Length: 188
Figure (tube, helix red, strand yellow):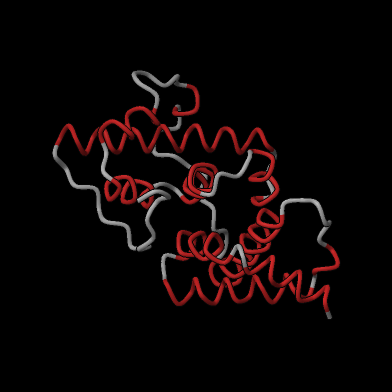
C-alpha cells in the first residue's frame, strides 16, 4: 500500500500541468476534468509500467494525450488536422525577428492565448507542451507519439503561425478571437 500511496502522491503533484493541458486540448472545463480523471485512473491502474527514475509528468501527459485522441476518434474521426492554409509554408524560411522575440516584445498574454487557441491542433499541442509545459523535444515526441523531427517541425511551424497571427493582429488592428479554453499561458 505504501508504494501505491507514494506513486499517487507523486502523480498528483502534476495535477495542474495535466489540467491546463487538458483545457487546451478539450477547450471545455468539464471535459478537461473528465480527461484528467480518466488519465489518473489509467495511470494508477498501470503504475507498474512506469519506470522509476524517468519523467513521471511526461508519462502522465502521454496517457492524457492518448486518452484524448482515443475519445475524439471514437466520437468523430481523426483529431489532428496537420494541414496549413499555405501548402508551401514548410518550405519558406522565417523572416524578421524570431517568434519568441516578437511575442515577448509586443504581445499581451491575452493576445498570445487567443492566437495560440487559433492554431491547428497539431501545432498548438506541440508549442504548448514545449513553451508552457517546458518538456524536451524527446518528451514531447513520447507524449504525442510522433518522431522528434516531427515535433521540431510542428513547433517551428506553430511558432511561425503564432508570430504571423500576432503580427497581423497588431498591424491591422484586427482582433484575434478570444480563446475559449480559459487557460492562461505560463507566467500570466
